[in-house]
Image (cartoon, rainbow, N blue to C red):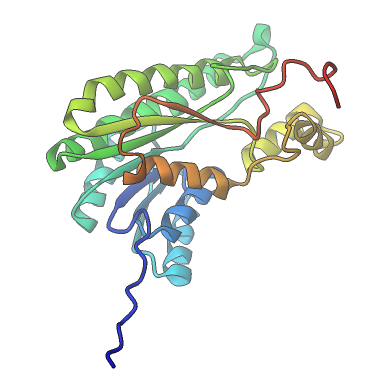
Length: 274
């Protein structure tokens, strides 16, 4: 009798090359780890030099082919060099995960101009620079997928003190929809995630700013308002990015995908049956 050799199952990102911004920690690291698990080759970009260690760990732990680039998304030339380095290292650039972002909190009447400018530079200009840098390679290949990290904040809900964050994240919804229309006929898809809250360094910092005496209480209060009773993990967000970056979502473009554990669903916190 003949023995048939088992063929390893293909993972959704096998053969794909992805550039991930803000990949040193938090959501970006979660996205990178998920992409690595699904077989992608990676260029990890962050202004934090620890991104180099993330790339090394993925290679050691999973055998992932990954390069790291210490750069700021606010500098278009640096991002262009990163996109070029990705193409030169792996031969293609199939997916861009535009994840890098910041959140500064302050009462609107006192909101510092420098914090507004920083929010616009990172959250809007950074995504703009990344998209402009990767799209030429996608046009050349005749395909590509861009996943932009927007938020439920600004487009759906808002909290006091988050004016700059809400402004910039809502702007990314408009950019997503425009780019999706502009490049649909050339087989480049553009979608955005709209995350509620995940347990990340940025959220922990916001909790300290919101409740200096007891930041864990602030995080617990967030979970209380989520029907699923908890915050997301970075890896769960990574799974959404992996789906939107993969061919599994080949007929989806221009979409805003909410991932918030149902947080934006309840009309009130006091009415209805228990």
